[in-house]
Image 1 (cartoon, rainbow, N blue to C red):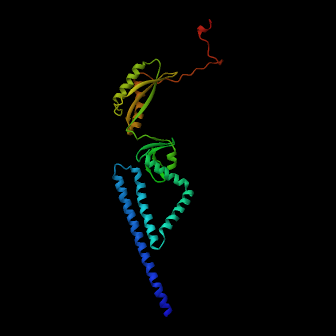
Image 2: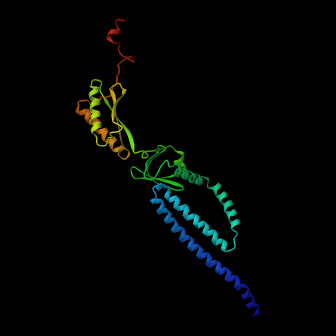
Image 3: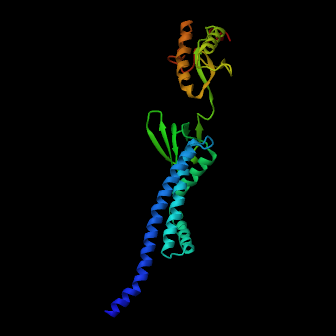
Length: 284
């Protein structure tokens, strides 16, 4: 019995110490997780309200704030059990190096995401084209992925490295965009009259901006007619609507003036691979 009491007395301080450390670790873990969530929400709200912070960066900023606190929380928990933090940091560094070598593709996406967020070739809400393959509205640029919604409502998720390494065309960065609508008139039609008709159409169209002023240009002579280009500027959000409208209105205005669209011209000669000689050529 005395030996048992001695063992109990010997183990009691150790059990109390471990119990207190375990209780403290649980409290630290709960408080740390709660604080990280609260800080994440606060940082997210503050970043969303700030006019100087792009909405695309908000999810990443929130994630960095949350996980920074949680990592410190885990280190504090391990320190309660006597784990040397210096050794732990060294182990984490070695593990990070090994993981980095194993996840090179993932790290490329992270670095590409950082570059996208730092240089901002695209932002949430902007319409872009990625490499000529994907064209849609940016929903989010995360730590690993970029999400787009295409014009037909399809959601596309792209690795950040794919976006960063591709040619990015941003249709929304500037407030105005230019458009050209071509129409062909026959050689027998009055070109000056056609240009006046198209210029009057551009001047009266409600979606055409007055500055820069719209213009009509002769850009090409084809076998079957003259190419006239109606050039105008529109607000970026109304560019497509104006393009579709002018494609219809230009042809309608020319047809109303009797200037029908020319038909393609093709020549063929039966029984010979050469065109017939002109009447005057026989004398020579």
